[in-house]
Image (cartoon, rainbow over all chains, first blue to last red; front, side):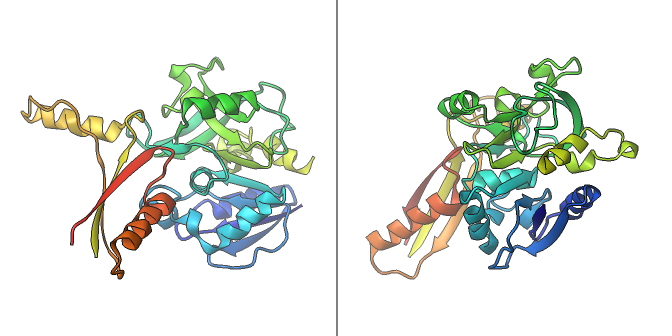
Length: 225
Length: 80
């Protein structure tokens, strides 16, 4: 599997995702956002960080980068695209995913491990997890409060596009387990064609036991299955 | 031509920053304040003589970048 990791000014999880992918013998190329050519790949990753210093709206400036035209083309041909954290914000701003990510409801930057339910384990990103698997993965964001109007949320549910949901320590999906105020406790959504995934939690920070948890391993193994 | 553009969250979208500002204003004695919604302001000058064309450019800029229509709404006015 070949992966392109897009590097925007202000990306800061680009190296982390590279290290995580390489742990699974996946070859990665780092692509600067100003490039006009996107080398052929199976997966394009938009990493976490603070692209353009979060100017205007998180991810909005990066979504207009030159390379994004090629990323959108790659997605339209069915190529896999993954956006983590700021990458998720870039995907919603570019229109590749519905909805938007608002400021956390408590106005605080939240950096901690959260409990998640794998709502859809039939995607190329989650097929090594069990159905409704219970996992723990870290989040680190200020704008992770997923918002979409009622109709969009209904469509997401009907099409099984909700991939990860926040839950409490007993793995029940409720307000107590919702760190940021996300609609329907959404932590990650996929597009209708199931090739573009955006998620706020960082699976790349969860592939080594010495980092407390390694529940992200199945995420990367899913890519190879 | 110069335009002023205002971008705010849609009414149905919660605005926790506006709410925090509202509470802070109440805390310092502005008892009559009912609600606060916060937003963004842009001042843009355009090299275009035709008013309609200039308005079309501003409208397009609002749609494509300055606002996110999923969560925000915008309005603008010509100032000179």
